[in-house]
Image (cartoon, rainbow, N blue to C red; front, side, top):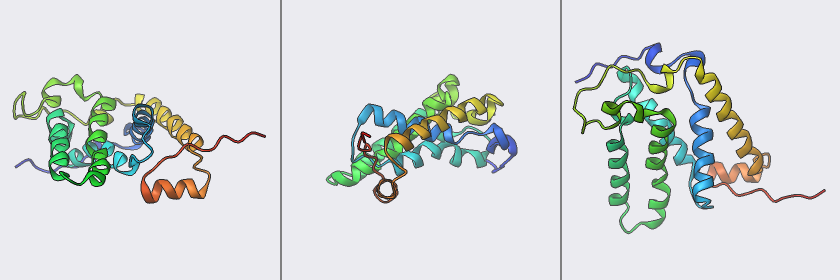
Length: 180
């Protein structure tokens, strides 16, 4: 069994780790692709952060930074939600977020990690991609903050009603265009 070792290198410290990058890009991407008013963005956010949260204690990129694990999560949701359409629609946000994490982390750049266990059962001693980019993460975080500011403005999250809709139901609805 792999030894748990949480280190500054694996979890990230200060400007080395990214958070807003994943949230902002995932929310904006899903809105642009699906434009589904019933999509649950709360679960998307869980899915897009899941890989780093679950792999970091093991000292680097592990199973949750691989495509087969994300596909297995997708299949598990589909099988578990047979006959439960509303639950399926919400739960699918998690594997979608997991797959977006792989894209926005550039996990595909390391073949053995991306295709684990199909490319072999051994984990390369690689740090989490989100902490191995160094100061470039500052740029990514700024891009993520810009995307989140766009979400805030586009969906009128200044309004308590719009924020409540997001927090209670996970939904984002376009803010009414006001003319002055």
